[in-house]
Amino acid sequence: MKTAMLAAAGMAAIFQAATAAQAAPVVCAIAGDYQGQYDGPNDRGFLRVSVASGDGALTGKAQSAVTGEVFAVGGVLNADGTLAAGSATASGAQLTGRFVPNVGSGNWSKLVPYSDGTQRTLTGSWGVERIADDDDCQ
Image 1 (cartoon, rainbow, N blue to C red):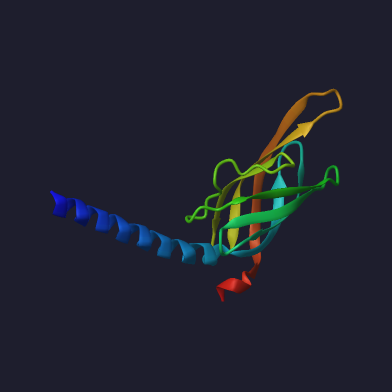
Image 2 (cartoon, rainbow, N blue to C red):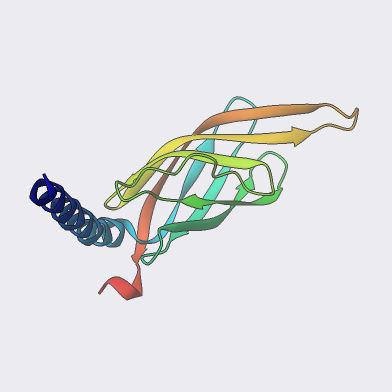
């Protein structure tokens, strides 16, 4: 029994190490600078983001072609390139979706306050293409 438990613990450690080793190349395959657009029924605009190779952090800005507003977007990518849940920013913008080598796409939402005190959630889709690789991945 003790031998079986040690063997299971050893296999778990090997699996975790292999998973960690595999995660880094996935992030490097998608790390870099991206630009593209977002679109929806009530807003559309331009999107420029960077994906960091070390931790998969996504940071960037979007600019509305409707209002001219510039707002922050961000999040964290999982090892498989999906944006982690709960990646909303202080601007109220949230991106969901996935990055694969050279492109990313998904859906967006943004909580917008109105002058009458109410709030409305705008939604739509987004897509970006990589314009530069991450220097740390070369």
